[in-house]
Image 1 (cartoon, rainbow, N blue to C red):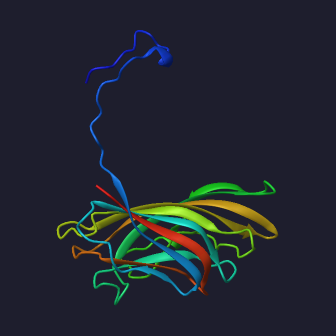
Image 2: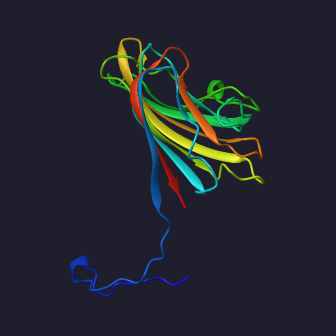
Image 3: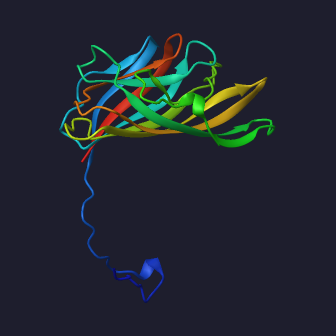
Amino acid sequence: MSIVKLNNRSVKDVTSFGSISSLGSITHIATQTASSSASVSFTSGIDSTYKEYIFYFINMHPASNNVQFEFNMSIDGGSNYNVTKTTTLFKARLAENNTIQEFGYETSSDLAQSTNYQPFTYAGVRYDNDSSLSGVLRIFEPSSSTFVKHFISTCNYMSSSGSSPVSYNSFIGGYGNSTNSVDAIDFKMSSGNIDSGQILLFGLN
């Protein structure tokens, strides 16, 4: 592999760059807005068109206090959300009053060949007026008939430790252990409704 060297190191004096091949394009597929919703389901638009599907969560606010935001997958168009999953979750957190500073793996939030909903969160999301969760979920080639369905996610949200709010950054990774096409995704809180928030779906090739 050759190294590109700029003899004149000032960017303002560079007159041209070598060509860079396209890495693909991202396409907006759908946006859903929650309003006292029991769940938000995407039952169309997830097919063989794209190699990767990306969900963005914008200010997901729970109607109940200290509940998990979670998801599951379907192979029958949303009739059942029960794909078997094996996952991991680790998190970093810092309290507003600086009393908690922690990073670690959380065995209570992972799944081992389970059809349960996978939480994006380790601790529950607060339901204060200014509290919410935002983040992203990426699912790779859900229509494959050969491979399991890998996914990764990172979310940041406001939780609690006693009276002090805490910033949590949670990371999950895993796979749906099925070679059937995943064609629908459901998002919900572990208890109560999604009071408000938006979920945007994009496709990437």
